[in-house]
Image (cartoon, rainbow, N blue to C red; front, side, top):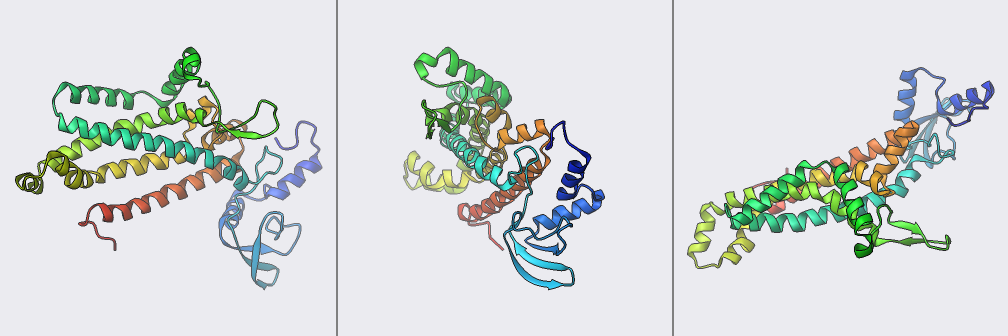
Length: 322
């Protein structure tokens, strides 16, 4: 893959030595862990894969023992197989901001509309309004993301293009008409953000409705009403905050999965994010990018869940951080 079809045996051997592929699988795994570890061990021999090369690492030497040097460094995710030795961290760094913008926009749509329609659905329980919202939310949850993406791209980007002025595909940054500089195209964010937000929107509506109905049956809500507070004050000051716990849980999970890469949505809309990069890496067997993306996704997921635990303590005083 890296050398093309005209490679020589010497070139293949050199590449295997460079990436440590001439070692047993177990040794290669230990090499990878050593690259990831902030404190790692490196050989002083230039013929060894673990040689402390400044091209690979920006490291601070701690101490040297025999032929091995211990260093403090940033995790090294290696280099892409197909991008002419481009570092994986650089590839992820170029794509994950686009995915972050898309995920934040989608989750913002889901939060605002989901909480609003969830409250309306709970206040008008068992009416035609409630039933209509439930049907739409169930339908939104049931439709696969790739189908929604194709449908929205075709309908709003092609059929209704003259009215919406939206494109079927496009990313956040695109070359201008003269091909001289990159410009921000905010309109390209609209369709993928809406499509990506449909499923979490449906979940938030259902959770907000059920949670609010449960809260409204609590004794302290009856007490607030008995004191003469208006229904708006009861909902705003007492009910919504206590009904948000399950919603926060759902939002955190969806947000983490969106940052993990909205693969179908990004690929169909041509959005240059982490999801599209993962698909391209899978198609070309670019293993370092795949592994690096998975590790970054895992870190994001864990970090968001820790952050959600802290939010719980603020939303519900009964939850204590220990």
